[in-house]
Length: 510
Image (cartoon, rainbow, N blue to C red):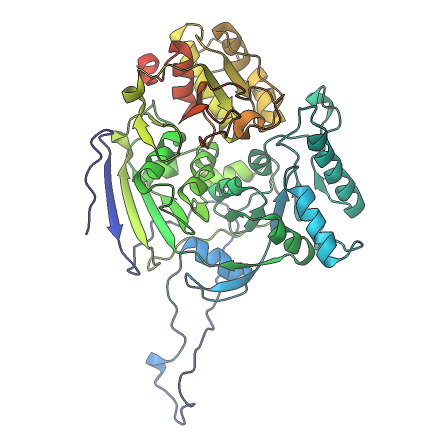
C-alpha cells in the first residue's frame, strides 16, 4: 500500500491507495427496512473471439463473465440498457430528469428549436424541471428577459415543473417560486437513488448525495436532451473516499470537502466519479451530504455520489411517490484510487483566495482582517443557518462586519423564521441573527455567489475581503475582480463575523 504522509497542519490521518483496477470490498450493506426493492439484472454480455464450438462446454465454465461495477457504472449501465460497463466506454444514456435555470435555459431552448424545429415538443413535459434562481431580484433588463423566456417556453410546452416568479417585490407572493435550483430539486422530490439527473449548471453534482448520477452539461447537450431524452456520456473511472471517525462538534461537511479538494487539488478528479463512504459519511444528514457533493466539480469531478441508506429514504418519504431503485458498488468494483481519512483529527478549514484547493487551517489565518461575511447559496440550507445561529448564540456578541444571509429557498427562509434553535429557549434563527446584528435574511436566490448584475444583494462591488459559505473563490466570482474570498463552513463564517478576522469556530463552541 502506498501511503501519503499525515498532513502536519491539520493533524488529519489520510491514506491514499493507488489501486488501478484492483478490487475493493464494498462497504455498502443491505438495509433491513422498507425501501424500494432492488431488481437483480442478469448479465448477458458474451464476446465471441473464435468460431462457435462444435461440442458442448462443461457446465462449470459456461456463462458470461461479469466484472464488479461501481455505483456510477451501475447507474449508467441501467440507464443505457447495458448489463456491463467499464470506464472509458461511451454510451447513450436515458435521462430521468433535466434541470435548467434562467441563465442557461434560454440558450438551451434556442438550440432545441433551431436544431429540431420551431414546433418541436420536449421529449417528456414531466421530466424537465425549470427553476429561475440566478439573476432574479434585479432591475437588469436582460436578466428579467431571461425569466420571461423561461415562462414563455414552459407555457408553450405545458411544462409541469416550472417554479415561476412574477412579483419581484415580494417573493412570498409567488407560491411556485423556490430559489437555488440544487436545493429546490431535493426539496421538491426530483432527486432519487439510481436515477440520472442532468442540469445546465456545474453544481448539479449536488444531487449525487441521493445515490444518483448527477452532473452538469452545456446548453448544446441540453438542447439535444430536450428533444430526445438521451445523451452520449463517457463512463468515468471512480475515486473512492473513505471517511471514518466521529465528527467533532466544531466541524461541518464543508470542512470535509475542503480537506478533500486540498488533498487532491482542483484537477485531482478531472472527469472522475467521487464516491463517498465510511462511518462519518453514514452519520451525515442529507443536507450535509449535499454540501459534500456540491463541490465535487471544484476538484474537476464528473459526479459525486453517496450510497443511499435509511437517512436517504426518510428524507424522501414525504417528497416523492415515484418508484426508485438504489444501487451499490460491488465487492469487486474497480476504483482508480482510494483515499482514507480519520475525520476525528480534522480541524476547521478555509480555502484561501483564489482557488478552492488553497487549503489552510482557520486558526492559521487568524490575522487575516475581513470586511464582510456571506452565508448562503448552496450552503444556505436550514441546517447551515442553524449552525451559524449556534455560534452567535454561544458568543452572546454582535458581529463586527456586515453579515449577509441569503436562504437557498423559500422553505429555508420560512424555517429561519419558524424553527427554534436547540438550546436557545425557543428563539428562532431570525431572532438570533437580529440580536447579533446581522442583515435581515434576504429573498431566496443564488445572490452574490456568482456576482450577477451590479444591484445584486450583497454583491462585492469593492475590492473587499469576504468569508463565504459559497463554493468558488476565483477572482471576480462574487463581483469585484480584486475581491478576496475565503471559503468556509457556516461555523467558521459566523465566528469570523464576530471577530472581524478569519476565526476558528472553536473559539466560541468550546
